[in-house]
Image (cartoon, protein in one colour):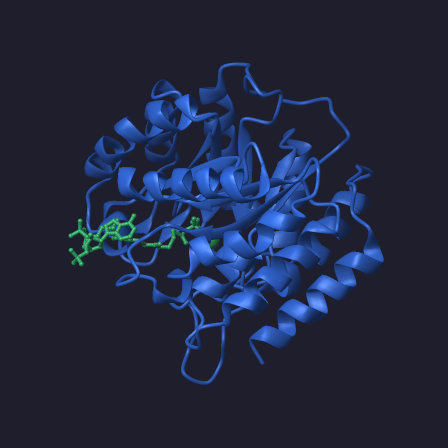
Length: 311
Ligand code: HMG
Ligand code: MG
């Protein structure tokens, strides 16, 4: 799909990593995590979510985290945040307006990410809406985000397996993807939400997704249109990265310290591993003979800090 040797990484630890923690991490520590992560050389940091604090109280301080990051945003790093609806987008726009007034920053948040699923069961549990209803919520978001100079990522969860609906047909993933692309969404992010994928079960999904891109692996920003978001619940994420790299995928999400244990896969005594750790992702990329901009010392420092937050 792509001939590029450079792989793009989004570190989602401040968002996906912390959203399911039983303890709410202090706002200043969240900002410190994002600052350490942005020094590692990743292209993008997914900082937080503008979602209902009744649903995800852990990230109820999204605006305050961005406020702390504003004075030190580095050149070239993309900041993103999840938004489930227009209200979330408006909150992101307000953060940018404040950063412009207070710090003269043209755009603090560069990208907003809407999220839906390939399974009705997960969509309902996660957003209280059917897949169709989530897509309707995104309609006003995409155009307005673009008017404000924001890129839009569209997550599709449960691309292989849903904790409620079971195995997912790759065509269901493709159909949601086609609708998101038709809406003008710039990047599709495929989520193996519960870390159930193996190379065998992932391959047909990736083939379907690549097919739906219709030979357009990069978007109008010159970035990869397709990103893979793996959780490492059962230890298969590294092999899945290898497969995706072979198929030409050049954009992945990961989290410093592997934060982000999935509550659906944890037991009372054992916490499920979270998103694929950035260290494991970088290793898989290097093993495949490809490159990233990662500074190993900075990554180790960020990973230690991240792990310390959930001990
Ligand atoms: P709802 O209860 O159906 O809708 O929630 P509502 O319109 O009745 O809103 C409920 C309350 O939230 C209201 O407040 C709204 O005003 C408020 P009240 O009137 O009761 O005081 N509200 C908001 N507040 C702040 N920001 C907003 C917002 N919108 C409404 N944007 C809703 C629907 C979508 C809001 C809710 O279900 C929600 O916020 N869900 C978020 C769930 C979430 O964040 N899940 C985790 C992210 S997805 C994920 O982790 C998967 C991923 O990692 C990929 C993968 O691994 O697969 C991305
Ligand atoms: Mg996730």
